[in-house]
Length: 377
Image 1 (tube, rainbow, N blue to C red):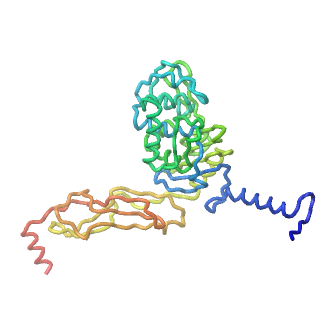
Image 2 (cartoon, rainbow, N blue to C red; image 1 turned 90 degrees about the vertical axis):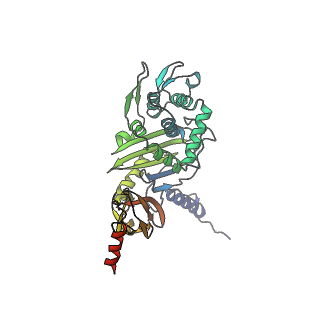
Image 3 (cartoon, rainbow, N blue to C red; image 1 turned 30 degrees about the vertical axis):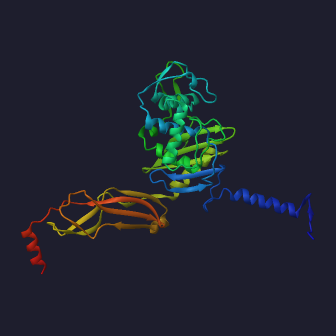
């Protein structure tokens, strides 16, 4: 028999239900053991340089993403288009609902100007004009968007349009959107456009574009990326900021307090993670034996540097493994790839680079090898 004690119109049983509900609501904002309270349904913070996930909350849930779609539109346009292209605006690109740069049929604009209208003003008409120009038609461009998503590992993403107006089959995840943004930043022009506060195009009318992304003004080091909103998607935001040469990317989907959510994420990243040089370019790693060479040993060095964001207590989790032959035969040219250096973090492979010959080693003649044998006896 269940005994219920009444108190002020509530029962003990009801009070228990309320307490449990509050615990669930509060704990949903405490992620990865960190006390970061976020309004977003799905969020993530990554290091743009290495892709390391620094924080996540429901990162793989498929959700609509509104105009943050345009990050992929810009990426595909930069990969397949030419900024100096003259784009003739077709009827299909005129009068698209939502945000607009008010294109007119027959108007001619450069692809560059359209990309600024896309990213700063969030023009849905600009998105369609770019897609038709670069892809030949909308369908081909959308195919390119989906192809690119799969190439970079955004496997839980599907695009049905280049602007982000709602469609039940148009979705992504916070993780995938971070991957897409990281890929876009590999293009210097994307970084330039996303980080521009205002822009004047070469149009006669409606030529001034003001960036809707307040991150550029409000957050120290803020340099991108894109806002998005529809009734179904809610407020969606991708923000980026760079400090000490490291760019972080924060994504929030369906976030009531979108900008503050992303600022909390970025603050968490910059305050808790610091860049550590794991190895420098040209750093000595190993010495191996040379057969028939004018020198007996060859120094192997790294062909590039590698820096990784770490918390102070994570340094011991970095391990290096070398894969090289026991010996090589002369002649060897400086810079020749000899083997590999693997970097592991907490047992997971995070980087692989070539190990190269620090210097050239010529092949010795018969007399030199004879003398070397005599010395070795």
